[in-house]
Length: 183
Image (cartoon, rainbow, N blue to C red; front, side, top):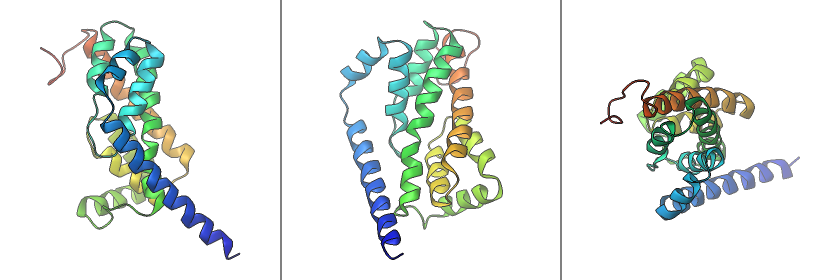
């Protein structure tokens, strides 16, 4: 079966190129597109979160948009739309890890993440997805590199993202105040 390792290598290279291309395209996306998507309600919010979370280590505005949409739409609906988009957006990190070409493999932070993922991958993915932080990308990269089953990764990432988005949308609705989001 010599063709199989070559095919896997090809898929890994394609996954890496896809991640890099998506991240660059999103980073340079004009802000008018975000405003147009916001006007679409839940489907637009899903797409904004998908696009925002598809970047790997580059900042994107999804949390602020979720906060503002929470003032106009029911927080649970906002959380489900944005959390679902965000979880699917995290696939870029997973693909980067799956590609085996992650440039961060030799960093201490990545090695620590791999240790956490090996001890309790689902809890690590859920926890890092549930709190606003850029380290969630590392959990996706580690999950892909360690070959965590994709449905398992997506499920726990989705749970964490929906919880986080619900808290942010609820703050936007005035249910409570969050530091950095409230006036």
